[in-house]
Length: 224
Image (cartoon, rainbow, N blue to C red; front, side, top):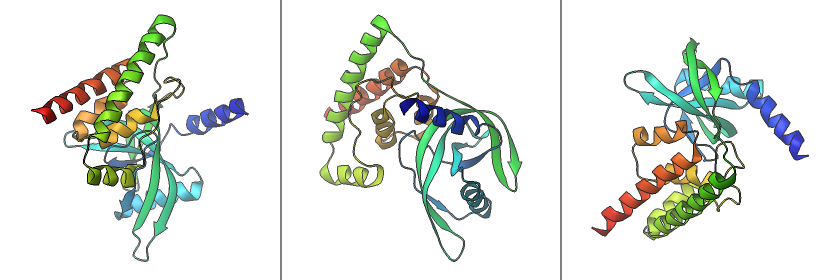
């Protein structure tokens, strides 16, 4: 059953790598909810096509003042769409797979791109043991940081992003790495430009190490 689901997952994403519709707006992360208010005509058309074709997926890339949009992004899956009489819609999406843009074009006013999906490089043996220790250490740091926030802020975060995911028994189980890492990056008070490099990393150890540095910096500044 697990093998069948994995094959279905591979098939779905293998068919979504050319002429992928791209929403240029904000940061999106694997497994993290990303609610959107759609009002521009080109994106209203894009969302309608995603729904009608049955894929219910599109890419999200951060806008860039120089290049137009970032080279790396995240696929979003539409979970629900509420349409209004004036054409606007509120769309509930959740992040899926990360990707790199290879080339891009235009279709009826919105951007499309040929993309390459990203996956974390797996390690084994002693390297895996070191990774597991680092994973557990950084998770505990993240948990402590979140619980040190004021109750009103914690409530606001949970209502928007959901509760902090639990610690993964195997941090390499997903090609995107642990879900809690992405949840944490979504809630940390960092500028989008500072968050973007994490999306491009294919080394979980590198991602965890850099998250740890951010947490140490923030904890140190709070104590000053």
